[in-house]
Length: 179
Image 1 (cartoon, rainbow, N blue to C red):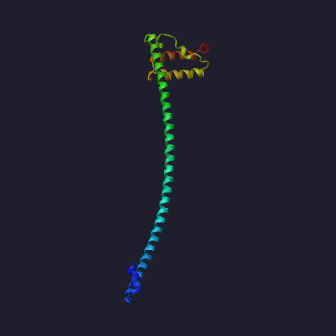
Image 2 (image 1 turned 90 degrees about the vertical axis):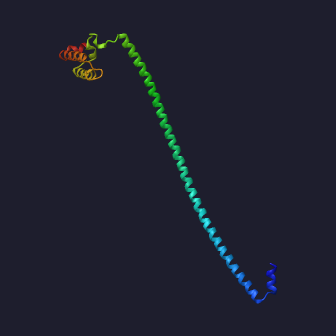
Image 3 (image 1 turned 180 degrees about the vertical axis):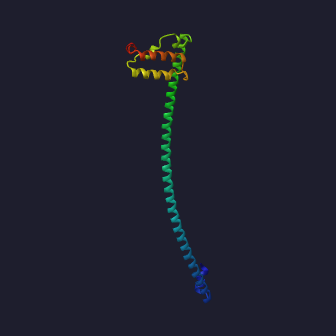
């Protein structure tokens, strides 16, 4: 600073001219730097606003994804609850079926491995409760479906007995009143 003041007071015209030129260049440099700084501030503000908008958009997406994930989780929990309830019902049904199988096995053991229908009993039991020709025909068709030899529970001998009883009842009107 001292050198600057001395040049102003004691300096030659040439030194003053050089000093003015330097001050002018320095002033231009400072103005240019200020404009660049201003431009950088504007750019920074634009980037800041853009960043804030992007953050806002990302937050909205994240919020909607969280909501979707929450709904998916609730949906999954409901499905799981339904499946668990279904499995527990299946387990109950399986136990009931096992008990029924055990009961049937015990009953079969009591009967001594013989077919209930092979004991020579009358098949008129199948037609009990039949009161008219239409119900007779329906009962006959149902029995044929059940005991047809091609079926698992089918038996040729029982079908022959059913056919014989059906023909007897069909030809005899009194059969309806007895059955």
